[in-house]
Length: 163
Image (cartoon, rainbow, N blue to C red; front, side):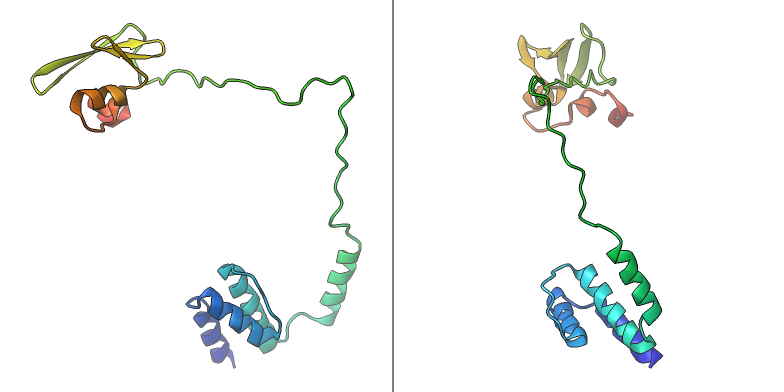
């Protein structure tokens, strides 16, 4: 019997959801509409093992029922109402996140040679300036220079990627 149980349990891991639902129906005699493979595998495996080895004792079943009857599973704390003169509950904050520590300080000139051209980018407080045009990121500057998508930090030799 033990070898047959092992074989049945090992085949569960290769079954599809629909096969597991059918196996569950055959083993328990009940329908199960779940489409969660792991849940179905565990339920079918438990049923097969319970059949082969006897399941849980009646004493354990009674104790579980006692515990379940003494617990109010659906109790929730009531939500207190705000006082009538309370301000709006929604508070809006902006999270700047700060500057990227890999970037040089504002006012720094980043210089790179690309295809025999010298590229000069000025670091600003809120972005970058290249040839009189403002950009939000080094990546957009690199794309303007090369015509292709580049990681700006990598293109200009800054940060971890350049190491």
